[in-house]
Structure formats: structure tokens, C-alpha cells
Figure (spheres, rainbow, N blue to C red):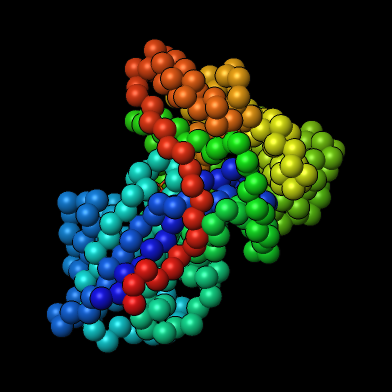
Length: 371
Ligand code: ADP
Ligand code: MG
């Protein structure tokens, strides 16, 4: 009975840049989704999850199509459907799929990519399709577009497929060229704070931001031909920004262009062991997501802004799509206790909500746990 695993991720910097062809800098976590796969003789895909009450059975003899009512099984079904479509392969028998995840669902740590990627990885393995990790990431991204209805970039699926322990990945989301960058953090930890906010970034709002960026490209292209916002440097943008008369579109584009530059600068700082600069860029990233991209909200702002005041905090920002979910903070190990206490107290007083903390440990990408 083969068992597979694919991780969730935390993005250190480079938010909402992936679908604009820009840079991102995520690392894979040591938690994720596990899939146990067993062949059955029923000609059914039977989807079960230890994390969900809903069970779903899908016939392998009918064309696959998205399930109604936002079923969780769309994520793995989507991966199988896209994999079959792209390789021209057909399932000759049914399978029981049992999932178990320990990524908090909907917390911006990409449980969705981990369930998509583990499924694509497992079927690539069992059917011997020979796709590379990056090809599997592209399959999983397509599954999220067509089966979950979220027009996401490639970051989450890419890092879930290609992650490496003790490294972050500096990824160019246009060319998919990437470098592993070792995380030598010494006496500093990556601390995740779950806002447990009831406000979620829904597919509608996410897709609206994707659309606003496309509008910015259309407007700018009348003056300077570009394919995507990543084609502009910060100084290019300063030159043409007066042509964008819609203030909302102007702010969205400014976030993306400056965030891409911050991501380059942050990676350079890390390579020079300059964590202080890395932290300042994280803080600036949050401010840009708050003021220009408008995807933070009171909960994430309270977490980040409280963290900025605490001695021993090197940097703190929202991570993931926004509104709810988590912040990521770099905190000196001797300050973690005080950090947790202060952030939890202020957050409870301001929002009435209870924050939850995890010390992040990096992990590897999608893999077989048992043959
Ligand atoms: P995030 O990716 O930030 O965790 P999303 O809203 O993109 O948040 O994805 C969360 C959804 O992914 C869940 O609501 C569920 O439908 C699906 N999912 C993720 N992990 C699992 C799992 N282990 N079992 C069943 N469904 C899962
Ligand atoms: Mg997701």
C-alpha cells in the first residue's frame, strides 16, 4: 500500500507576484498532506479525508468534471483529471484515496497545493507517467484553476513539488528558473502566527486582484509594450505611472512592481547574511500589501504591527493570499516567549481572537513515504 506526502509552505517574501511573472521566495514546511493509495475493483475513485466528513465517489468510466458545492475532493480529482488529460492516459481501475493533512486548512500555508501535489505525485508514480516535479506542479496549478476556480500563480504548487530541507527557493515565476538558497538563521527562528480570522481570501477576491493586474498591463501597454507587470522595473514604473488614472489599478501595479524588487533585494541580503535588511524588507512588504494591494485587514495588521514593536523581532509580514491566515516573523530565539505573550495579548484585546503560534521547520518536497 503506497503512501505519499507533499508539504505546505510559507512564503518569506514576494506576495501576489507569482501570477504577474515575478519573483517569490517560499520554503516548504515539514507538515503537509499524506495520501495512502489502494487499488479497488469497483471502477471508482473513492475520496476520503481524515480532515473532512464528506466522502466522494467518482466513476472512472465517465468524463471527469468539477464537483458541485465547493467539495474538497475537487482538489485531488482536479489533479487526476488534468494529469489524465495532459498525458492522454486512462485509468484502468479504481483507487481508494485516503488523505490526512496536518497543515491548518485555509490558513495561508497552502494545504490546497499540498493535497493537489500529493495526488499528482502519487498518480505519476503509480502509472509511471514520468513527469518531473515542475511538470507535476503545473498540473496541480491547472487543477486549482479549473476544479477549485482559483486563478492562482505557480508558487504554491512549485514549492510543494520542489522544496528542500533547510532551503528557501528563489523562483522566477515567468521562466520557472530557480535557485535553492540555504537558510542559515543561526539563533533566529521562523515563527508563524495563525490569526484564526473568520475573514478568508475567497476565490472571488483573489481572482479580482488577478484581473486588476491584467487591467494595469492593458493600460500600461498603450504606452510601453509589456506582457506582464514583472516586465517593469521600479524606475520604468515611476516613468509611466501618471498614465494610470484609476487610483486602484495604480496601487495594485505599484505593489507588484515594488514587491518584485523587494524580493530580489531580500534574497541578496540573505546571501550576504544581512538578516536586518531582510527583516526590514518583510515589514515593507506588509505595508505595501496593506496600503496598495489591500489584502491585509485588521487581524493581520494587528499581528504584524504588534510584532514590529517587540525587541528581537527582525521582521514580520502577512503570508499567503491575505485577509485571514498567518503572519510570518523572524524572531531571535531568546525573544520567542516574550513575542508570543505580547502578540497573543494585544491580538486578543484588539480583535477578541486567539492567535496560535508554530515554529516553522523546513522540509523536503513531494515524495514517497512507503512503496
Ligand atoms: P490554504 O491553501 O491556504 O490552506 P485554501 O482555501 O486554498 O487554503 O485550501 C483549503 C481547502 O483545501 C480546504 O477547505 C479543503 O477543501 C482542501 N484541503 C486541503 N487539505 C485537505 C485535506 N487534508 N483533506 C481534505 N481537504 C483538504
Ligand atoms: Mg490554497
